[in-house]
Image (cartoon, rainbow, N blue to C red; front, side):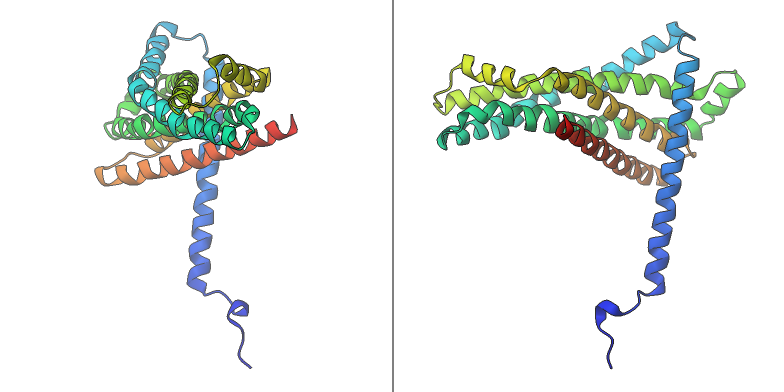
Length: 274
């Protein structure tokens, strides 16, 4: 009697491949978790150490991951407003449920798309550069030189990036959301939708609650911390040769996206429970 295909045992090569992938995933999660705990411990225990050195570095990270990306974020905000908000409001008015526009905009733009789009933009523009820069620093022996000078590399290289990227993503997300909401009404106005500016912003104010602001700040700060920690881990965990840069950057992007999506899922659960 012939055994059905679904009942046949999996080939050993496939099981070996799945096992290796699983072990590598667990090893990576363990490494990033340990690295995150070390960074947290250093940030807490050395919070007031060398402020004249760290504060300019944090401001530099805010500039690199924040101010330099304002043109991109402005374009993304206008595109998000025209494509999502404008068409959504126009469609809701066509089916006579325009009173739900505020709830839809807050749920889609403020809670989900705004933070995720901003985090992905910063990851693509700044995160990969972190991997390359830190990997080259490790390869040139700069990390060992810091240790020889009794300077903690995590305190000097990682902590400013974590704080700077968290602040930058939070600020950029707020700017993106404001730009998207304003450009969304511009698209609504151009479509001659019977919705006055007062009604438009009144619906937004009614749909927003104070928990939205608190959770938005927490979510974006966590996104920035995840991106900074993952990219710093991939850059500092091993010296990178030229042929290793592409693989390390790809791993950093993949792990950062997975981490941000996982955190976003947890926040969705929190929104549903509220």
